[in-house]
Length: 354
Ligand code: ATP
Ligand code: MG
Image 1 (cartoon, rainbow, N blue to C red):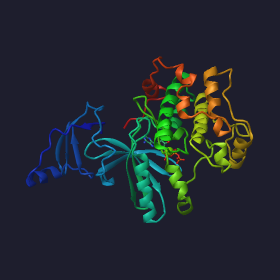
Image 2 (image 1 turned 135 degrees about the vertical axis):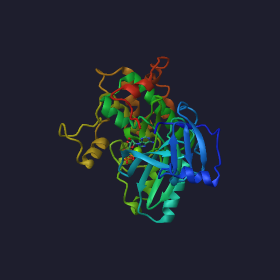
Image 3 (image 1 turned 90 degrees about the vertical axis):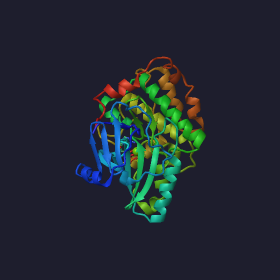
């Protein structure tokens, strides 16, 4: 089915006899669609195929949606915690991502987690992936998220190998806006900033996702025993178990950007060509060795300076998200038309379609 948005202009209530006539067309989901006509148990609506950019009907504040309102389209990703699916709202035709995290914990704890996720994520910041609803259902937490059709920066990097500085600057600016919102307005530390938690779409937007999730899941890890995160992007102070704050995310940002620019994770494993198999060895390297830096023969002085402003081992020496928005690496491409929409859509291979 093509992407479509409902124009709620026409809604007919069918007499019982007509309902019987229509029933033979109903799919398992209770929806029948033919051209512009959409029928389900609540009546008939005209669907516009052309108005794909109209604002979605379902708002984050909408508390009426339930899991039964969605049709599963396909699996779009797998993380350590669970599976992410593309789903479609039966009535409005809107697409969402449904993330399901298996949690074998008590109902009351799950209820609390779902509630916390909802509060944490019902943000209206354009640089943060919107969480529409969280459910606890069948031993799992289900989260309805804004669908980002370009997938994650990790997916994108696999296609393009590395990202040129001009695009990286525009990407970084959006991530900084999102981090500034989380750190300075919401007073939240992300705790799990990494390429797979930065999502992109065909409009050239970059948004942060999964903030707070790791904190909540780690908080219940004793009971849940399901969360296995990555230590790759963790700051030295977190690895050491010291008190840490929002600047821990800035360290992660530095590593993410350096990885995007060079095409490989900045800490090279002892054996060339092999990944880090021993997580303790990597953690020791992050804590004991000097931080990575951008090679100055391959990158601009502005980029090298930005990376070094993020990758200070001492958190107080790192700049904040607000500081970094004024950094020359961000400023040098301001005013230049950087078309991230085309870049995300065309680079590597075209974006996934339904
Ligand atoms: P971890 O479980 O360690 O956090 P992860 O971030 O890769 O790893 P998930 O958050 O479950 O795990 O996401 C898995 C993948 O699903 C992502 O890499 C991305 O490709 C896809 N994905 C997640 N959320 C969305 C979304 N809102 N829109 C589109 N794709 C998404
Ligand atoms: Mg994630």
